Amino acid sequence: MLSNTYHRFAGSNLERLAVLSDGIFAVAMTLLVLDLHVPSIEPPGGAGPLWAAGAWHAEHALWSALVGLAPRVLVYLLGFLTLGIFWIGRQTQLNHFERSDRRLTWIHLAFLLVVAVMPFSTSLLAEYTALRVALLVYWLHLLMLGALLLASLRYAARAGLIRDGGPATAGMRAAAERRIVVAQALYALAVVLGAVSTCLSVGLIIALQLNSALAPRVRPLDRY
Image: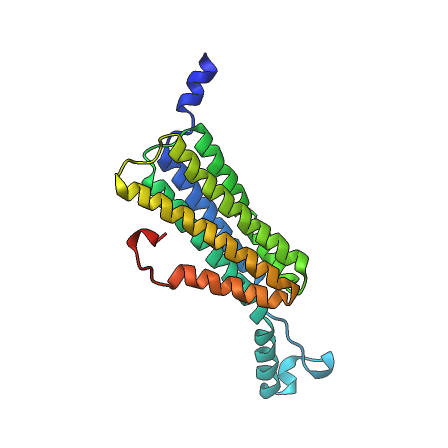
């Protein structure tokens, strides 16, 4: 009896859940940049100070090293966009929820668990961009994030936790579910292209993320 009473009240505070979510997203986004290291450059022959080889050689060496960082910068952009998109999705859901409960809170905690691992999968993809295993791990990460976000929305609807806004509420749910499903299908298509080129797959995922973040929507309820 006491346990059942506890479960009815546990995890019911949406504000605390939102604060925890924001904190974990902020930390994960910050950790992404740690994979970008200042390049180390050496003079021709590898002996003596670089500046002894001349200012031109130093500038050229630094520029070449920075150009070499381009793949890691692109993967960093991909990771940041991914977290930003899913943060907006999570925020949108919480804004439409009237309250939470214990089960919904645990679904969101599982979602945040996956979010916290994003710097690892992003670093893995940056280090081994040409390997399909790294691409597959990143895609599975995206799949888990989408599945948990969808599970949260559907559970909240079944449990009566979504704020009743009439047709607008139904429209929000339909738009949100459609967006998640379509996005996951496109991510899967991008991974299939990895059979041809993993770099092509990463480029397509980045393009999909940019479209999701920047492209205008025709219907207001599709802004998710």
